[in-house]
Length: 163
Image (cartoon, rainbow, N blue to C red):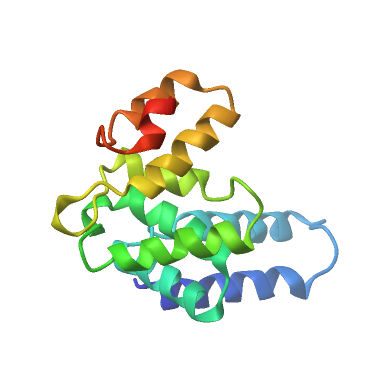
């Protein structure tokens, strides 16, 4: 079952729930609600392609927060999808997040990228991202994690010596 089929099922379930504005009172109504809840929770998990489509749809809509959330889920669930072709997109998303979202909003994505061992084209470390991640970790008093992130940097990068 693909994402659009699941959305249709969820929409039907939500509309069915909205059709009655009162709590179930009879045993048959309670059973119907239980069946609806069971059907809702029995839906299969999203695939990697579903996650990719969610990210690109949010990007087309200009919803940077949703792009960050979707990309974080994609990186955590499907780190194999990180490749050279998605690198420029991620760089743009991180840049947009700094401009448009509250400070620190990209922390979950940065942590997921770091955990997945994300690299740029030609196996280069994304030092700008690790710099931001280290600073965000320092702000949370997570010194050991910030030091670990800073070890990924080349020795010629000035900020690495600060940590």
